[in-house]
Image (cartoon, rainbow, N blue to C red; front, side, top):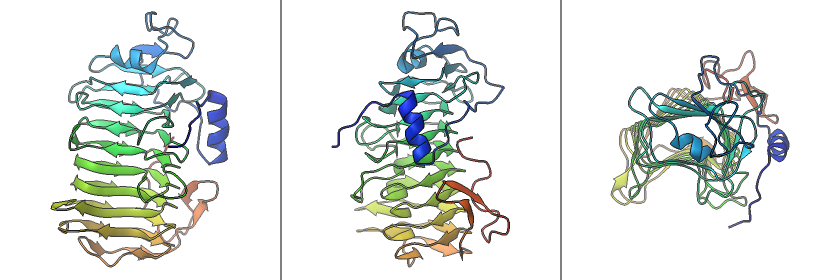
Length: 342
C-alpha cells in the first residue's frame, strides 16, 4: 500500500484544481438549518454551537438525533467520519458544509456508514479517502444518500463500496449529483473502482460525473440487485459499467439508461463478466457511448442493449472536466439533469 499524506485545506484546494475538481462555496441550500457545528479550530468539549463548535466530525455526528443537521465550517478534518447511528425514515440525520462557509469542508480519511446507521444524508463535502483503507466511503446502512459531494482518494484505493455480505447489506442507497473520480491505484490493478456495488438492493446512481477512475466507473459485482444507473457521465475510466457475478451469485435486474459513457481506457464502455452463473434482467437502454478502447458495448451476455447511440457527445471541455454537452450534441437529453458537485 502506498504511503499517504495528510491533506490540508490549502493543499486540497491546489490538488483539486489541478485535476479539475470544483471547490467552491459550501453549495448547500439556503433552506439548511444547522443544529450543531464543528470547526477545525473548535473543541469536542464545547457546546457545538456556531460560536462554540466541536472539533471533530465524529463528535458532531454523535450529537445528532433524527431530523437534525450537523454543519462543518470550512477547513480540513482529519480522522475521517464514522456513523454508528442514523435518523428515522423520512427524518434522517444530515452532515453538510456550513452554508455560511466560503468553501466546502474537507473530510480526510476513512468515511464509514455502519450497518447500525440508517437514514443518513451526506452533502456538499469534499471527501478525501486517502488513509481510508481498501475503500472509502464504505456504506453498510440503509436509506443513505450522498448528494453534491466531491469524492476521491487521489488514485490510492476504491472509492464507494456499497454493502458487504458479512458487515451489512446496503439497501436504498442514493448517490446523486456527486463528482467521483481519481479513485484507484495507477498502474491499474483491475480491482479499484469509482463505485463498487457489492451487496446492495435498489441502489440509485444518478446525475453524477464518474471519471478518471483506474478500473470500473461502476462495478455491479457480485450481488447488486435492482440498481438504477441514470443520467450520469461516466468517462475515462478503465471500463465504464460492468455487470458481473461470482459462482452462483449474480447481479440482476439492474438498469443503465440515459447515461453518457465514454472513453474507456482499457476495455469497453459497457461490459459483463460471468465466470459461472449468468445474470438476468439487466438492461442497457438509451445511452450515448463513444471511444471505448476495445469497443463501446461488449456483445451482450447477461444484459440486453437497446436504443443506444454511438456518437461523440461533444463535451464543453473534457480536459477541464466540464462534461456539459455543447449545443447540437447528438447525446442531448442524456447525462446529468443537474451539475454534479454544485
